[in-house]
Length: 92
Image (cartoon, rainbow, N blue to C red; front, side):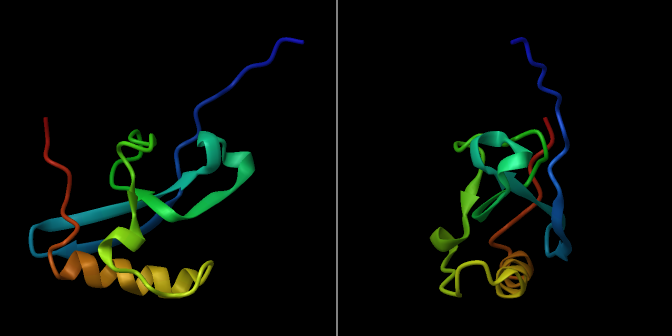
């Protein structure tokens, strides 16, 4: 049976001003399918960059908090932005 897929913007997880400007952090989704739910460890800095090559894993930045503890992940990412470890994407 035919089907249609439509683009849905990923949900913004946080916005924080850092030393190099404002950083938006967006959720990613399993198989890029919103209906399958948000990934906990993987995020992107631009809403159109949703592939695994464009996303980052917060564990690679040193996150050691509990899985699915959204508050801990949020606080960790705020710290990363303020420390300059996450910066706004460069404009083309």
